[in-house]
Every structure is written in structure tokens, then in C-alpha cells.
Amino acid sequence: MASTATASTPPCLLNNSSTPLFHKTNTKSLTLFTKHKNPFLSLASSSFSNPHFFTFQKLPNYPSAAARKPIFKVGASSTSSSEETSDDDDDDAQEVYNWPSVILPFLFPALGGLLFGYDIGATSGATISLLSPELSGTTWFNLTSIELGLVVSGSLYGALLGSILVYPIADFIGRRGELLIAAALYLLGGSVTAYAPGLTILLIGRLLYGLGIGLAMHGAPLYIAETCPSQIRGTLISLKEVFIVFGILLGYFVGSTQINAIGGWRYMFGFSAPVAVIMGFGIWSLPPSPRWLLLRAVQGVGSLEEYKKKAILALSRLRGRPAADSVSEKQIDETLVSLKSQYNSQVSEGNFLEVIQGPSLKAFIIGGGLVLFQQITGQPSVLYYAGSILQTAGFSAASDAARVSVIIGVFKLLMTGIAVLKVDDLGRKPLLIGGVSGIAISLVLLSAYFKFLGGFPAVAVIALLLYVGCYQISFGPISWLMVSEIFPLRTRGKGISLAVLTNFGSNAIVTFAFSPLKELLGAENLFIVFAVIALISLAFVVIYVPETKGLSLEEIETKILK
Image 1 (cartoon, one colour):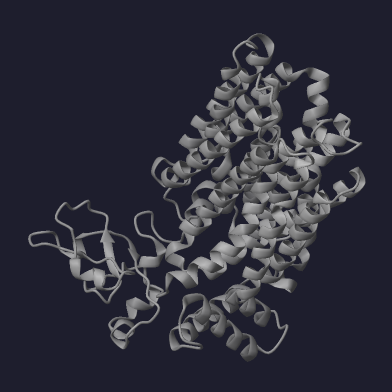
Image 2 (cartoon, rainbow, N blue to C red):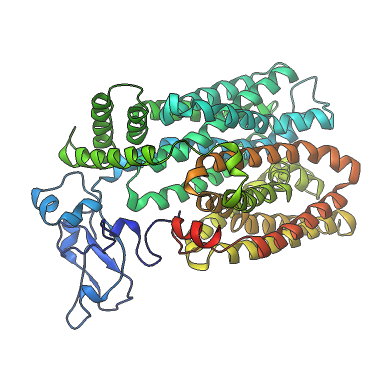
């Protein structure tokens, strides 16, 4: 996420006059890290008297604070003394919180992303089990390629429908309400799928589960962004991508343990149900988003004072402070003033036509193009059919293919972590160029294996690992980062919604079409088609995609979109 701060100074360190905030060094205050890599900075041993604080002290003969550029501050505490809250007005820009109160509002919404990823991983093994005469435990195991495509892509069609349905009602039910409904749909969809007596009920269960994905992927990032402290918002939103990848790995793991069981696909799909129960109870225990409560108040839905009191109580809970404390009240007052100003300064929100006009059109070409190429380079097919591809590649036993899928999942998780750590150092565009180039090479290798390297099954494994690794440092995290950065403020909501629809729609189409196209063209030719698309997407990145590293949202709008 970009910010309104300068490239060198994050917004959490600026006051209203854009002046860096400096704090005296002691074990009770939130202390400043500096941009200079000073070897004479030492960790004050006394700071460990409070495990939530890390205090760096300056040794003699080092440049004064005025000569240094701030990077960020860290620190958390469940309570704050009067000294802490009254030392300087600048302290108000740095929220005080305790970690347990911050982790849970992130963790339970993030389970919605985990369950999305789990569906991808579990489907990989479930398709092997479901089609096996010996392992399916059904009399209708002989599915056609069209029926198999519907089973695999059913949840994606549900997610597409869910993302369409949720937009007009999102402000009515709220972020917490969205996530509660998503948990219920996850539970219902997973249970119906696991106990399906026939193909029709199975497809209904997949559709219900997909509706849960659509709501969760809309509500989770909104709730996390609106409830977490500003100084760790970027970290938590990035970690949500890790939860999705961990879900994929979990799906692979469950698939590998149940692949030889009769009716193992039922366990693979059904495992999501207890996780959905945990998610539901966890979301129920959380307060509503304070920002959503204030939004409803500004929209004139109810009493302004009543919604304001609820928002103060919610924020106090989210930060681990006493109920209705003065710090939370002050933050709510400031947010309310800002929200009223934004509401009054614009006659209406950006409409659909504005998304395809002027600067917004350029933003949609960039953001929408990235999420489109993210899917049509074969990503859903490679992930959903990883087990089947490996089985075809020589891992004849279903269990062998499932275990290699677990290895791929671990590798995917590791590469995602690397991307999260490096995207602000290397930049968006270099990672995209390098990653998409690797994707094209991996697809050529897959085609070569199925065409004339069939005697070397290791080629298929290497190609899949290369594909996964390159995808996770490029299209995986960066496409959505660019989408969140590139749209102008006025049309950002509508633009991101359109990008979500583009993503889920193209995902469902590619997933559905993979099996029939594989029969029609053969695997070797199909992967060549994906490779050609990858080369086109590489040209798109080089020519059209800008570098946004270090730019604020306003700078992106004025320097790139104008």
C-alpha cells in the first residue's frame, strides 16, 4: 500500500504538518528507528522490562535526531501512563495497542483466506480420488471432462457470483456481517459437498462454498484494514496472502493423507467445515469495524451519537484499552471529522462508467490486465490439477502425486514469504518481469515433457516448482498490490470490485476449460498456448506497467495516471 507520506517517511511518523515525529528515548515511550545504518545503535537492556517495547539508544558522537530520517516506530502496550499520553502532541499519531487484541481481529478474518486456499489444494487431490473406480466409493465416478470441469470450477463460479452479490449490500451488513455469512456458507458448502449422494448435490455444495469465498475475499481485507493499527497495517495485509498459500498447503497435506482412503475426496472437502466453525465463532467474538459504524452514522442510518459510542467501544476493544477511554474517543472524533469531510466533498461515489474513462481507464488497463494475465497464463489449472499432472508425469500411485503436491505447497509458501519481504526493496516491476519470464520458461518445459521428455519425470516436478516459485514472486502478490495502489481515490472502490470480478471470472473460465482443452489439444500443445500468453503478458508488463515503489497514492495519481 502506498501512502500520502513522502517516499522516505511513512505516514505513521508524520503529524498534520508532515513533520517527522521524534520521541525521547526511554522504556515507556515508543522509540524511533532511523534510516541510517548506525553501527553504534545499541539495544537498551532496560527495555526488556516491558517485553512489548524495543528501545534503541544513541551513543555519543552520532548525528543529532534532526539530521536523521525516520523509518518507523514499533511498540505495543495494553495500558499507557499519563506521562506517555501527555508528553507531546506528536504521540497521538502513534497508536498504543497490545498484541493479543490486534492478532485476533486479523487471525479470524484471515481464516477466510485460508479456506479459499484450502479449496485449491484439496481439489487437487479430490479430483484423483473422485475419478478412481477403486477409491471414489461411488457408482458415478466416471465423470466426463465437462462434469469434472464443473466440479473443479464450481467454487470459483460461486465466488464470482458472491463477489457480484456482496457489493450492493456490503455497507448494509457490514464487514463483520459479511464474514459471519461467509463462515456459514463455508460450513454449509463443505458439509453438503462431503455428504453429497450424487453429482448434482456435489455441485450445489461447491457453489455454496464458492459464495463463501466471494464474501470472505471481499470482507476480510476490508475488516483487517479498517481495524488494525496504521503502523502494522501493511504487514498484516501482506500476511493475509501467506494465509491463502498456507491454506493451499493444508489442502495438499490433507489430500496426501486421505488419497488412499475409500471416499477420500469426502474427507478432503469436509475438512473445511470445522475450520469454518472456528472462523465463525472467532468473528462472532470480534467487534464491528469502527469505521463501518461511523460510515453508517454519516449515511444517516441512525443516531450519530449512538453509532459514535459503539465505534468508541469497538476501537477500545480492538486496542485492548479500557472501555470508552479518552484515546479511543479522540481517534474516533478525528476519523469522524475526516469521514464527514470526504462525504461532503464528493457528490457521489465513482460510478461504473467512470472506471472506464480518463485516468481510471488507464488504471483499469494496468490493474485489470495484471489480474487477467494472472489467470490466463494457466495458474488455476496448474494448481488445481497439480496432482493429476504429476500422476500423468510418471508418479503412477495417487499417493506419490499427492505427496509431491505437498512439497510444491511448501515451496509456494516459502516463495510467498520472499516476495513479501522483497517487494519494497526490489520494486514491483522487476519482480514481475523476472517472475513472468520464469513462468514462460516453466510452461515450455511442461510442454516439452509431455511432447518428448516423457522418460524424465523430474522435468515435470522441476517445471511445476519453477512455475509456482515464479508465480509467487510476481503475479501472486504483486497483481493485487498494484490493483490496490493504482486506482484514483474517487473510483477505487468500483475499480477494485471490477478487478475482483475479472479475476474470479477468468479463473473460473480457465479452470473449467482446462480439462476439455487438454483432451482437444493435448497437454503439450495446451501448455505451449499458456506459454505464448505468458510472453504476451511479459510484453504487457514491460510496456504498460509502471513502477510504484516509494510513491504515495497521490503521486501515483498525478505522476502515472495523468
